[in-house]
Length: 116
Length: 114
Image (cartoon, rainbow over all chains, first blue to last red; front, top):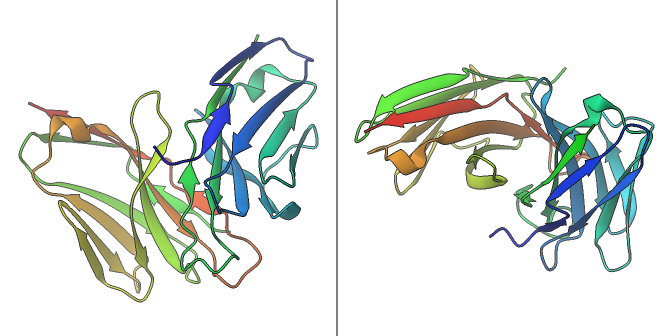
């Protein structure tokens, strides 16, 4: 158990809909990262937050957005869903930029999104 | 741009050693990581190596880093059927930089035959 929690585990929805994925980082970790894992693209970095502020953006679509709340949990919002958005979405946390000695990221179990 | 390459499949017999190889492109990577993903599960951090090290050993795992060739390998000694999984190599940027995201390879699927 990495200490990172994600809900829900599975999500099935229709094209055009909007969903919210939730992540709680490990206790004490201020950085949260979101990744998408799909068969064709592999594991891709989407976005990073540190202590409530956006720090870095990767291959995140404009239809996707995220935020990190004062209690450090994070949400990834996916809107106008398309079939191609079906994937595993992982959240990871680290103590980066908070005095941690490595960039070591600990991953949650993921949310499997299926868009029908 | 940054890229991490791995072979896609490796098959070994139980008890043998497994060697999973990875090449990366970003010479500024401070740390390099190995993650394991079992079917239907998340990513489990196995080990990492700091870029100024050549080797790191952790029980059955040995990581070798050739910084000149940008080549990283993971050796699993006495491979067991429970080691069957997908192994991902990942690199990250400078610790002092603004980005800490990981760049992953496509993963190597290790199959261990009894």
